[in-house]
Image: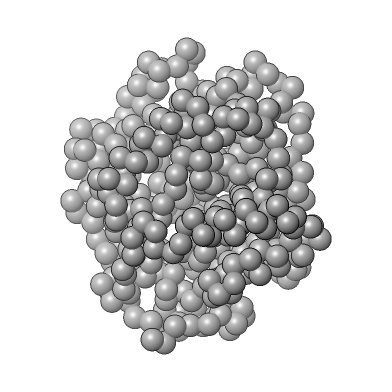
Length: 384
């Protein structure tokens, strides 16, 4: 099987009332994806079918969003004020932080099901119920049944906050593709050549649609945002930025394990060495660009949160975020956060086992590679 642009367009067209929307920017990313999926990803037949479905679904989402906004252009006049973005190297506690923040009823998060069927924009009562939520939850429950090891590593319910890279994946410029598949040419383009600005402009349009009837203070997370902080803050100049930090040896071991589990769903020929190389080179660039951004914008342009502190006292870390941005944490919000922690203890969906050695890495080697990062942020390392 060979994946083609024509196949993606035709499959999407069958599910849309109007022709798919694919501008030059999105077409460029999709072209890189198709070439690498065919030439380098080493997908089995089921993996090819899954990749095709993934691309078609993202084109449908993109077209649905643009079609709705074309008919309702007034939505683009609505402001998005002081959105809060949580990011950090993957596996550094961003999921726990965003889930705690989402318990605040004043905040509005991008929900998993909204990444699948965003139109029409939901009413408040539809955020956690209704046919679209139920359909998405059915898919999540099937995944929990047939791939419980994925949920043990990272679990999201249909109405959980999801990564806002899925606001960008319909532009075919998102780290999710490079995580799921081996895409060396796409990765090089994505990291070093691509223009992220149009993707963030779509990111904003998507949020403006979603907030039409269910507004709130946008609170978002995506581990990969350090790659494109300049573009993020160009589109959202008053953004509040929060970065989580953790021992990179733990981060790499956990991250490699996640990619290994995911890529094996689509290919019978997955290389541990390629995964380790992919993540290390990406992490190098994330740290470099984050530091460059702070050099230009000031050290305090990003609020830092340590994984060890979040694990020790989650609420204290959350209070620190509110204090940093001069905002009150209501008793109602704090009670809801305590309730979330009680209902979602660590390991609820199983224990995640991982090690660096199975990916040809060592703690000492990782610590040496990221020595400056460790020292700069005074990150505790695990010697046990």
